[in-house]
Image 1 (tube, rainbow, N blue to C red):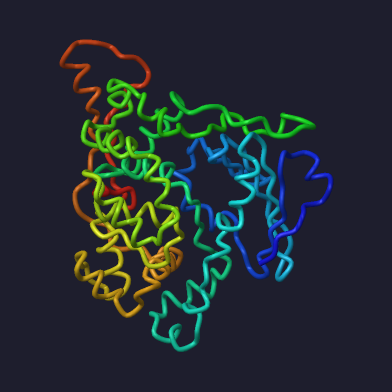
Image 2 (cartoon, rainbow, N blue to C red):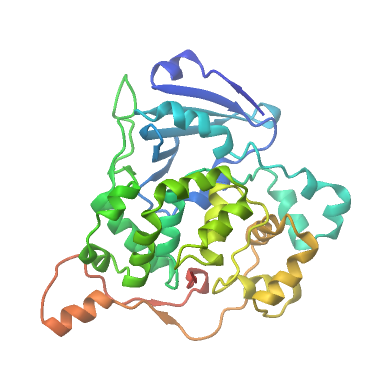
Length: 359
């Protein structure tokens, strides 16, 4: 992997820029997809002209565009950034694109031979995937807390509502023209902005008091949280769990994104243990069973899970439907008050992939 300057025309249109050479297969969307909170995430936009992201760096907000081009050993990504955080964002690009994600141990012949055929085939077809490292703990932690013990649909709906209410417009893209900036691209709230969200707005977003209290409790230590990015994934996860309301599932989901952790698995997930059990043995299992099944590949367990997901395998779907509770709607009917268009109806969810996640 090498870093060089981008062509002059691209550099002239940005506040900061760089060209990153992958020196091998690389898929931009497969790599960054884990960071997106669904296709409607207001801080991301995947378009033909590249993947756009908006976030806050230590120097301030930034808009980042990543454009992949080239083939084989010439595969590269051009990164352009705008805003006061442009320099910091460009410095983070290699890690963001998985420069530190080393698959050599996973791909070593002796280790590879121990993997299930399904995983080996998935890896053969997906050599271009990397595990990204963002280093931004707050940006990963808040939406992960919102996903605790609710369906993915419900969590992402609430996150979008809060983003549209409290996110800020992404810095304008380009000294030459601002027309290329994706419409509605937003920078997620900072820790201080999240802490200023009033209780009734959490309620309108469908976020219960337990989850909103966990967010508030965690972000009162936002400076300390961001320092966790400099620790190892295991240390960061352990320290995160000292905050009431943050458990092993939440910590694992965060370090997968902030540290690109190749071994972190979401113990306590509503569906993951069952999925892994069916994929590897044809039978349902629990968390202890999942850990036992993945133990032979300790150090690479997240890679194994990612490959299972990319294999196309789907576990049997049966059992009761889960209904998304419209708590705001219940309160509206109780009080006889009409709140307006943000009150969403109760939805029935039949797809287990949209499942419930623990703390």
